[in-house]
Image 1: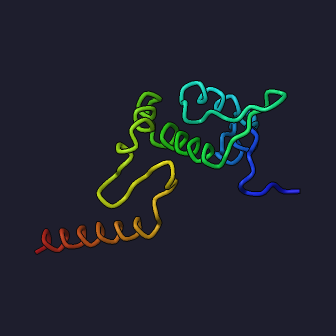
Image 2: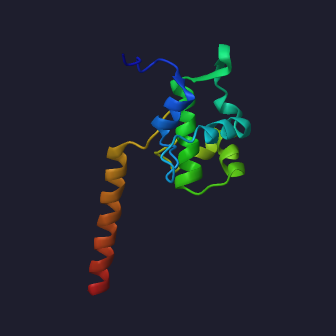
Length: 130
């Protein structure tokens, strides 16, 4: 039986959702999430009987953001803490925001920006070639 999407998830389920898998052993890296809990107060799980951790979808989004900033963007823990503590620092430009509530940039905005950049590059090539 599958859980509803709103249901709280265990640490193993979160590790799978976020993609925290040890590449050598092929096991879930739940220890990474427990480490991040100590560093980032934003991801405190609900701990019920048996000391099992349960995460809401909001906490899972925050964990995804932390993983993206640390692993994909190469930021430091200190830098990610600063960003999470100051939501205004998550602004990429005037029209686009990457925040905990807006997990990913909208595809259409990205496509639009790529088209605009491509057009500028083509115009520059034309100017260069005369």
